[in-house]
Amino acid sequence: MIECSGVLDGRTIAVVVPAYNEAELIRDTLGSLPEFVDQIIVVDDASTDATGELVQVFFPSVVLLSHDDNRGVGAAIATGCRRALALGADFTAIMAGDGQMHPDDLPALLQPLIAEEVDFTKGNRLAWPSVRSEMPWHRWVGNQLFSSLTRQALGIDVHDSQCGYAAMTRRASLAIEWDRLWRGYGYPNDLLSCLSLRGLRVRDVPVRPIYGAERSGIRLRHVACIVPFVIIRGWLRRTAPWLTSLVL
Image (cartoon, rainbow, N blue to C red; front, top):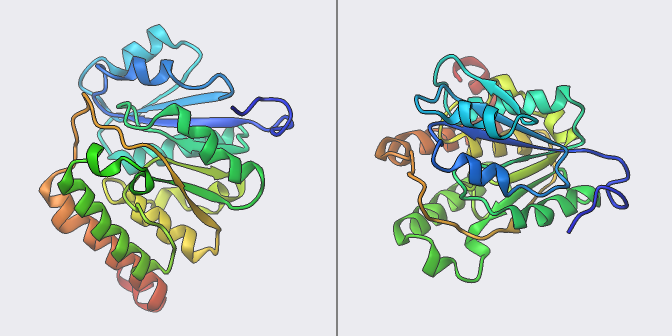
């Protein structure tokens, strides 16, 4: 386990938690975060349930940011990461509000950043030994497909492109144009595109796949249209920047 002294040497860790209608799960998610985390930033993306109220009541030390309108998970992450920068965080992690990202995997994501080996670490559920029994088969197939397309399109060695569990150094966070990040589902591919274009070092880290009480917000249009579009846009940014500057 990472301690705040020693390897961190006074450096701070922030965790950004995008949340939309997570009243049933947000308390367990926030309550399970490790003690070494210095700042927890919850971004309530205009929930219609009591997500924000529960955070205020049970976690008063958490930084709660609220969108007036539902902007999408990518936009919520951008809002949280900008605040983490403003608070001076040296490392920023992204964890969902629905409990799908195990807090015990956070140290493994942070270690390569603290050791200055890479700029950005990304969870790889497909490398977890029991993934075939724990991840629904259609998600396993879809993640394999999109990860292969993302590697080819962006020239970046990632094997679970759709996993949102990630961590980054301050250098990486400063290099990302958060105002231009894809606002909804598909943001992980857009984020990888940005990292690739800026020559930042990215590493996969095995994390456990968790599927329980959460309700997925992914719809057919995300799988069939949005994610492929974001991947194609990333490929064009890499291979034909003159074209993307005109039309994308």
